[in-house]
Length: 196
Image 1: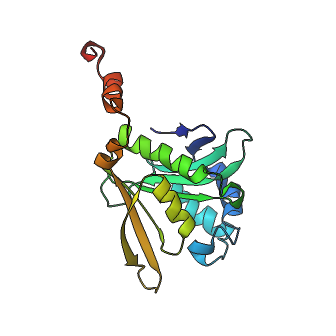
Image 2: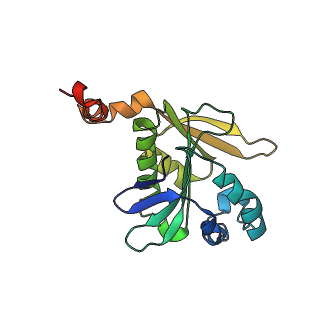
């Protein structure tokens, strides 16, 4: 099971029941929630009774990860890498929600790249995708910096709002790797007698 991922500045660990206060604080910031609920905070009752149980329902190698700043131990937000229920396991969705104090520092890109790498190198993903409101320029920039490419614009069911989908296919991701990186990775994971 994928319990944590580390980057230079972040520890991404599984969200637990102990993160309820962190999630309430995150979803209480009107600016964080601007493109999600029009700035309306999520109630503690909804987080504890609905959202957190749904987050904890993901098992195995996919799910939601608390983003912890390594230098301070502060909770910065969360990332997700998971296939939606009923969708192919090898096409996980990437997502993130960070506190305002973490914006503009490259944390969203850093965490996204780490999870994309895990998806392709350890989880057998053939495609990673992400969605956001078309108006959420900051989130779209993160997707682009993480290597995802625009796929489509679509209407959100029952509303006049438009969302966008971005994706990164395994073949496109492999093209960005230095020459020999895949062979080296494959050699490391091969049986000892096969390494030559």
